[in-house]
Each structure stands twice: as C-alpha cells, then as structure tokens.
Length: 562
View 1 (tube, one colour):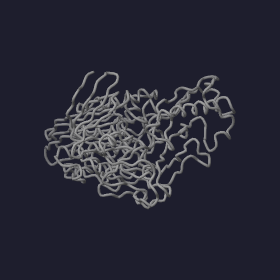
View 2 (cartoon, one colour):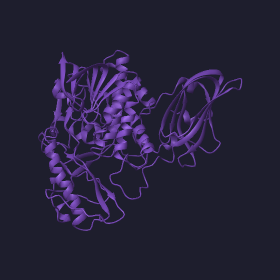
View 3 (cartoon, one colour):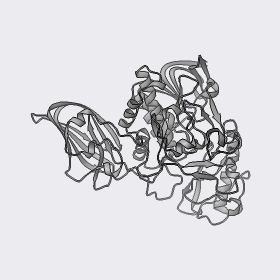
View 4 (cartoon, helix red, strand yellow):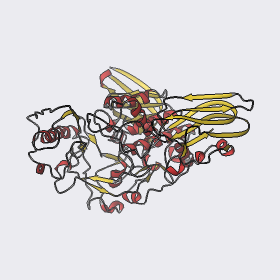
C-alpha cells in the first residue's frame, strides 16, 4: 500500500456541481485546493452515472450564471451529440485546467483527525491505485451531499423532518421523524428507425395496466423522477437496498410502456439504466444559521446573502413510488428568487468546516427548494470565493467583509438579488458612448445594449490611460427552456444548442493618442462571461461585434474596463 500526504489551503470533499464550483472558484482566486471525489467521474447527480438534468431557479431572467453557466455553455459547444460521458469530460476538463487544483478521483474519505474543534486532516482510500491520501488543510469544504465529514469530525447535523413547532413552519409533520425524500434510479430511452422488442428480466416487476401506476405520469419525454424510494429507510446506509428495488421498478415501468398498452414506445429502445441512485436528502449540517420555510417565504433578504434559490418547495412524500394517495410530491410555492446566507454554509461547532450543496444548514422544508443542482453550484462558487477571501486576508471566514465578497461574486457574474454590482473606477470616470453597457446590472432586457452591423461601443479618455483588463457579459438567453442534457434521445433533436443571441466573434481595439492601434480578435466565443487581460496604454477602447450564433442583433449586458 502507498500513502501520499498533502498540505493545502482548502480541501473539498465531493465532486458534484457544488464541489466543482467550490474548488474552481477558490483556485481562481489564488489558493491551493485538493478536490476529493469518491467516484471515477465528476458531476454527482448530473454525471453519466445518475443523469439528472441541472435545475435551478424558476422565473424570468433568474437562470444561474457564474461557473454554472460557464459549464453548461462549454458543454453545448463541445458536446453537440449530447453524450453524457462527454458532459463528464467537460467537467473533468474544467477542473484539470486549474493549476491550483489537485484532483483525486476514486477516493473515498473514511477518517478525519479533529483537535480542539478543528479538522486537522482527512484520509481517503483510492481503491484503483491502492493508495491512502492524507490531506491537511486550513479549511475543509464538505460538498459530498451525505455530509461524510459530520460523523467523522463530530460536527452537528440534522437528519429527517423537524416538527412544525420547532421553527414554526407549516410544511413539516406535527411530530419530528427520521423520514426524508427518497432517491431515484433513472433510465434513458432512444428512438429507433423501426420497431424494437423489449424482453423483460424475470426478476423485474410487472405493471399490467395504467391503474397499476396511479398518479405516475409515464410517457415518452418523461425522466421518470417519480421512480423513487428510501425516504422511509436510511438514505445513506440503505442505498444498495434502494438500488435493487429501483431497478425492478424501472424495468417494470419500461416493460409496461413497451408491452402493456399503447404508449407510443414501439420505435423506442432502452438505452441506459442507472445503477447509482440519485439522492435528494440525507444529513444536513447545523450551521451558524439555519434557513427555514419562513425565511424562504420572506425572500431570504439576509445581509450576508451570497446565493439564491427559486425552485418551488418541492416536498416529495417519503413513501416515494409506493405513495398511492395522490401525486408523489407537493409543490409548495416559493419566491423566485429567494436569498441564501453565507452563515448557512459554516459549521456551528467545527471552526474550519464549511459546506455547500444540498447539505447546507436548512430545515427539511427549506431544503425542498434549495437542493437542486444549479442552486448547489452557485452556493459552491460563493463558498469557494469566501474561503479564498478568508485565507488571503488571514481572517476567520465568519468575520470576512461581506460587501467585498458580494462585489467579488457579482464581478464573477454571480447574480445576487437586490444587489447592484460596483463598476470599476476607470469605467465610471471615462466617457462612454453607451450608458447601459456600464450600468452594473448584467441581466434583464432593460439592461441590454442592442446593436446592429457596424455598431460599436467606445470608452474615451483624456489621455493615454493604462487598461489592464476588459470585462464582457454577452446574452446567452437566460430564459432558454432546455436543460444541460436531455432525458431521452429522439431521432432528431431540435433543441440543445448554443443560444442564437450569444456573440461568436468580436474585436477589441485600443487606440493611442498617436494613432497606434492594439487589437484583440476573438473567434469562436461560446461563453457569456469573458474577462480579457491586456496591458495597454490607450486613449480609446472600442468594442466591435462581428457575428452571433444566429441572432440578427448584437446583445451585450456589460462592456467594462479595468
């Protein structure tokens, strides 16, 4: 056996979207990160092993941006065939491109050393390499979903549903219990050019009629999220038991659709079935603050707001598939958006333990809105940025300057409801041919510069002035309806492509007082948020759009100079 030791500034446990965004954000802000993932691929519930699409906040212009949008747009560009394994590769590529991240795949954390209320190190076993990895760090971010560092470190956590009376909520039961939302094994189907037979396995369940599947919509185009179990069991230790039962149900549902009634499935085949259940809920940490249903309904207007949610309070019944009294979930309304505070991501009793994802400090009711993956991703970016600020200023994360953190997040294209981004002094103090381009509001039709062929935007200085960077926000259509990946594969796919509104090619020209021109020519842009580093002394900076992915207009939310 081999043992490898690491001494780093941040150790991130868990490689789902929250862990990926935590690690990338921290690394980009200059600190060293070790990212530990217990699977062979990154992505968690969105990965090729589980295949849940990425959901987030409902409502006009509320789509999550920052690193989450960067990942989704990168996938649309690099994965036109919509292969889930290529989505895995997109996530892997983004993490590996960060020089400050050390990635450990196939590595399961199983031990932690805690002294005087601080985690000193964690230990992981990498089975395929027969190697123990021991990671010491200043901060430990648990983005594992199941909160593996809670039982290993002694951190406080909750499991199950609180009683109504504990936080004066209306959604929970009268008495507290250990029930949760369950987990699902999904399956995917693919359309073929002709009829395809399906012969069910003998051990699969049989559902002879539609009445055998009460309140369970089953149609071509569904992602079968309602094939769910485990809420009445133990959603951590009974995972394999759930998988065995879920596979029987999945195959029984597909057998029903293919062989027992007309469901339009004659020319469809079973393409993939998941052996790793996707989880909705398990342990939730007790943080410096616990977000409740009441906070959700009051819009979460916290002073330390660093992220937001806006999925409904989608509270699945613990019985899951075997709930037969009605629809398997209740969509309790939630504001779109509502805010989430940094305090809900900091352990109440372990000084250097932080967390992002579905395991943050929320009640069961609030979790039902905050648990979806795009929300988890922006929580991760907020957390990674906060840890980097704490490390670089040598300040406990509980005491960092929140306004500075919020400005950094907004500068990195993370939307914070009810906040306006501070634009740079250079942009403020210069003359500009378009005021809307430097408004500090990076979404919403009313904040968008719209140009046509030949139109430009220009900053003008009184003399040659040093410019170190250019910040651009393009229109990636935050109201597009497609998710990051499909739930089924028709013969002809008409969606899932780069938004027509996104600017594909453009030029930036810097013009000196003597007429000398510095030019950047960008081709094949496929991102909403772009930061270009330059070292120019110029009297004018001009943005010149050249082409889009189909839109006849040029649409830009921000053109800023630093």
